Image (cartoon, rainbow, N blue to C red):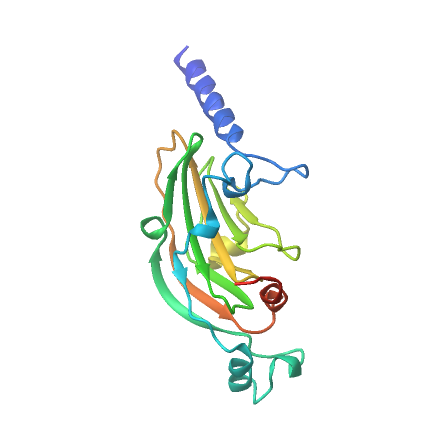
Length: 210
């Protein structure tokens, strides 16, 4: 009887955790900050966790590509520079206690970025949770949010860590834990990349009025 009760309890919890997600018409998870239910609560435009300086991208390109400006680059070229970090995600992220669970949001931005990238070593996701990387400014027709779930982490990410970029002037990192999550996990952002060439961010920069 105890075994049957335990199995029933596990199934019930699994169903509850699955029910936390919000899906779009194609079956992809919608991060809570983009849902109708929470977009008025989790206002990522008002979150500015890390604001990088503005740079002259053409000058950076010329310095690192033998004098070639952005409009002179070929197929192979230097496109960005690394910023080594040890950022404790949960400690520095904006925290939201929602009806469905707990949400942490951390943003990285630069008004001149062609693209932005982060690296998180030892990356994994707990059951029922998700970790999303979202282009922070609209429109972002070139790129949709990328969401990682328990049991669906690619082997290359498990072996080498998460290394992901957005062709955007702002990156939003969103981590969700449903109510009842008993384990604890945190993320350390080991590296940020500022991209001055190679992405589609320049088109976005021109379409946004600051």
